[in-house]
Amino acid sequence: MALFPSAFIDDLRTRADIVQVIQEHVSLKKAGTSYKGLCPFHGEKTPSFHVNAEKGFFHCFGCGVGGDVIKFVEMHEKIGFGEAVRHLARKMGLTIPETGPDANEGDTRERETLLKIHEVAAAYFREQLEGPGGARARQQLTARGLTPETIAALGHGYASSARDALKNTLLEQGFSMPLLVRSGLVVERDNGQIVDRFRNRLMIPIARDTGSVVAFGGRAMDADQVPKYLNSPETPIYTKGRTLYGLNHTKAFLRTTEFVVVVEGYFDFAQVFQECRLPVVASCGTALTPQHAQVLKRFVSKVVLSFDPDAAGLGAAARSCDMLVGEGFQVNVAVLPGGDDPDAFIQKRGGRQYIAQVQQSTPYLEYLLDRTVASHDLRKDDSRRAFLQEMLGVAARIPDAAARDQFGDRIAHRARITESVVRDEIRKAAVERRTTVGIREMPSLGHLKPAERGLIWALLNQPDEAVRALGTLDCEDVDTLAAAPILQQALDLAHSHADFSPASLLARLSTEEAQLATGIAAEPHAPAPALACAKALRRLRFERQNASVQREIDRLQESGVGSGIDSLWQQKRELLQRIAALEVSGT
Image (cartoon, rainbow, N blue to C red; front, top):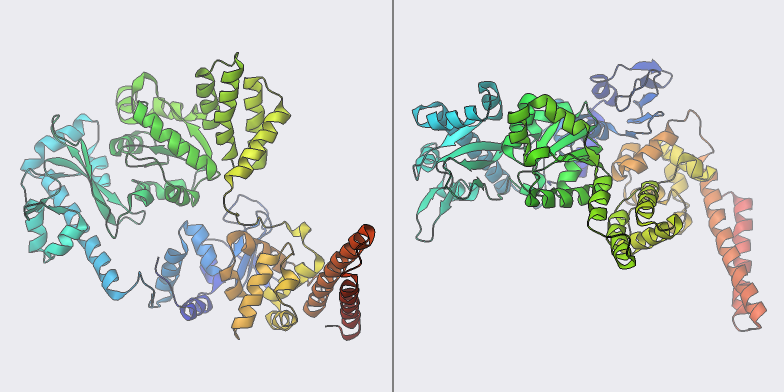
């Protein structure tokens, strides 16, 4: 991802009036010093969504979301930070000065040219499909039950048997041969000859969710033609593990639903898209990746997997389901009867029957439990142990502790083992699985000390006072607090920037941290003055240290060890003096 200069981001936040940006999507009314409206991120009848124009942030008291103007665009448009910045910059008429190793002029120009090459190629393939040479390809599409409207919407095309028809067309358009090779649309053979990659194939354009074509899939026209499907290689504009086929067509639909159906193939997608009116994407014949999951998280929290019922399909589905469960999705599996994939099933039985299968889909964990039980004789101790061992690994991947325990109870019931024993084993497996320390979960508002709340409130409402208060603190004063991630970022920012602002702090925070901060900042009154809060936090630190020293003194006295006690008493006296000095000076 390209980087953006911090000065540009600050300028963008200043120019993008958060009230005007949000009012394009939410009806806001003035309410005191802020604006109020119905939250666009959850259904409500009483307005709980507040926008603070002066400080440049929004917060919903109903669902807890919050952030600055860029974060609002990210959440509302379901796009990443970079796309949100570009979206806002275009609206403000600002030129984007991208910097960084991935954003140098040569790389940017190459990517733009590759996109243009694919745009021309897509138009060429469509033209070939519509011409005399595409008659058989049109017949095959019609035989699949696809309508002319669907064929046009999905941009289907045809690549003739000619060895260099597309290559010559692109060269005539002025594109260089090295870039054609780089695009993956032509391939250089061992003898140095350069020919079209796709020949005698039905062509399916693969696009980003913005609609730009970045790759192609080609299906064989003849039964003996191999491979059956030929796909573009990865290029500077196409990464298979990040691209979901069809998302550009169904993205708007996904925004209105709580789930997505994931199918495997291009024509599976085409049939569901045409006949079922379901939110659907395709994985392009591979198991889903964590990058795919991050894309889907922008839209939904539930995934229904509808992969081919053959062995390979079930294998891909299992790998995808395991990953999605680990990413926190609710996952269902729709296994179609009769050994059909979605394409064949819909052609035979129609869209309504397929919708019914999706509606009756089985929660993946139950599906997996049933399948695993069927492969073990749970009357035997060794089989029961093997079953338990196999399921422990699955349960350990469930991120939510309550859901993990519930699944553990289901395992215990099937294996006829005490629930508490299974829960303990799952917790051990979950701990062993954590090879890296995860991000600390942010506390709720009620778990913060008043001094933490007061300082956070001041950071977003009275930044000058907050910065003065931060000047009396260091990292040791905050590193054991529940709100340490927010306060440490504020300390770093205050110590390194003279122009501290609420927006610059929010930009450094995670989504959860920003929600917590804006929730506190949206309160009408300060919980306590900023300097008083800083004083309280320093006092807490000294009291923690004093208690620790006293515990060590008590331990040494009880054990009869005299060495070291004098230095500990000296530390204790110094800490008590610091606490007393705070009371006298107020700092």
